[in-house]
Image (cartoon, rainbow, N blue to C red):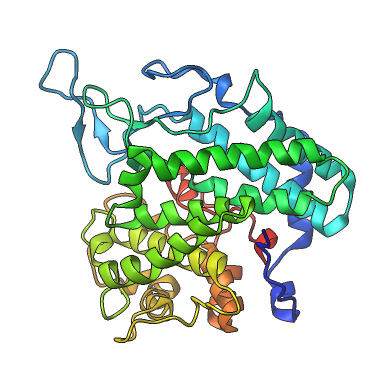
Length: 373
């Protein structure tokens, strides 16, 4: 269950603003814990404890009296979507991550007490807990009540077991609460790996399957499920690299989208997350490459010039948010540490740590990388 890489040197110390981390934790201390039960989804077929979200790129049908079925506009986010459950989940994750980081830095128990309260209310308490499935995520009115593709909505939960592993040393994280959290993530992982919607998401052919593995591998490490860890390694080596990465390190299926820049950055970020999560002394994905040379180094080398200067992007601009890109994505930090690359670490320091647009924020899996290093 060891998520942390023990690499502490002058460079990694330089890239973290400790005062800012503690400041964010102080803000979390005065934040009321969010729950999905605080918001009722009018179109959900589930109950108050069931996560619900609307499909991002689907809009009311202008050609029918009831606006059904919704129609797809790829890359164009419908501002009328129900997003309250996503926002509650992300807020919980962010507060827990900041509080765990502050506890790790200061050893002050009050940060741990607050973090455990967030976790207990969101995952365990009968009145406010979220059920461990995503049956009703990314629903399309008039078409379906939920889709496997909706599993990407819980990508941000990857931060949570890492935070819990830090909090385990606190007085607040009792054995009973820790066991309950393990049970929740075991149940969710079981749903992800056995339900048809979970299997559909695992078998997608673009960034969605990579994000499935980021979640599955993190949850599997948390509950010591080696079978799923091995599966994610196999998918990385035998599916993601050969099927999705081009010889130059790009990802053609992402470039073909209406937001080619954002999706290209997004998949590299999560491929790097996988390398960080899954690499071991005996199986180092940071150095793994196919016989033709395709590996994570190529993906990083492809995208880095366009992170440094977006004006050099040779493909069409994204139809939304292009001018807001790029934010500081965690892959810059993780790769900078793994490869001792100053250009990655410098960009991590220079770019915006908190993008203003909601879509950009939800496309960043790791909110508090200090917990991962």
